[in-house]
Image 1 (cartoon, rainbow, N blue to C red):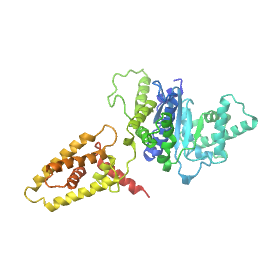
Image 2: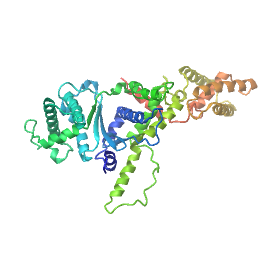
Image 3: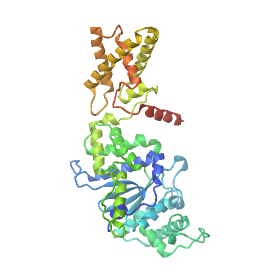
Image 4: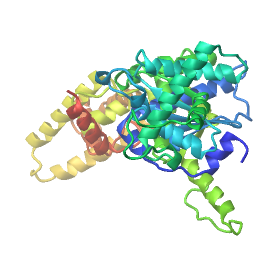
Length: 459
């Protein structure tokens, strides 16, 4: 294992705690999506095409919140959202502990010190030690490229490196034994050796602090223009809303953050897997296989973008109707206007009142109703066949087609005395019973429960 990418893929991760954070915060998935789009943009050629041999990919929740791989290179990324009320990162200790730099350092050591590492955060670095730390990382990278550092700069680098090493030693949790100060050690008594300082300098030379990400409250609105619009500009597709294409790619990362992505061989068992006597080959194979549901490569992103460009309406956020009924939710999913939804709810109510007044107990009325519902279903079936598309939303064309079909039935006297409006209300009643759809079938009850929970959670 010579390259950083090979080490990252072959070595099992020490924990998987990050997946719980991804469940709580969509922000992490959004920030990983931004990194994926950066890989995709960098891989495009001058004509906006993705080369077949493009190799960039992201592995979610492996070693850190995600890992960026590009050919032989690898970068571990720790994403730390910080609420505005908490303010900026004010001390090195905060960055080591709450900022996750200690965990990054531990994983970097475990991976033979080969990957780069990065902290992604929405909180700024406060003046003083935090900004000095960021400055030192840049200085050490300059030094690695052959730049000479003057005496005052070397003094600054040593001061920051030794201070950072001390915080690591006092952190203790999960780090190798040589990086754990004695239990009784304090900030005043903790001894930092030159070896500790040198190792920290090597770490800081590959550390990047990205502290300009948006807060989660504004990510939904800011991310499409910040991260997707430049891609669409490069592809010369300014005719499609960036929010729709962003949502398509974000869905990939939401799924992979939970290790639920597709696997080429599905749940088929492993058979006839060759292994060495030590089991090393089998272990490496199983690690790579386990990473498949967590991995997104630039070709996956390209497919998501192409799909959204061909079908942008399918990824546009739904306008949630005021009334959370099965009928209104289904019409909203189909892209019907609010006015159409309100009209449909009223027509459905009128139809139900009509049958109550007519009296279901009157002999023959039940049979009449069943016959009428069969007519309504035939009308809905024919209208669906006319307007349904493989992509996009077709609820509004379907609503218009229903009216046209009922007009023709009215002219032939096939509505048993009902006017067109009451007949349309009857079809709406069937839709509320999930016998007629304005879009591909989905979990209506689950969607209503989700929307109710969102409304309850809003202040």
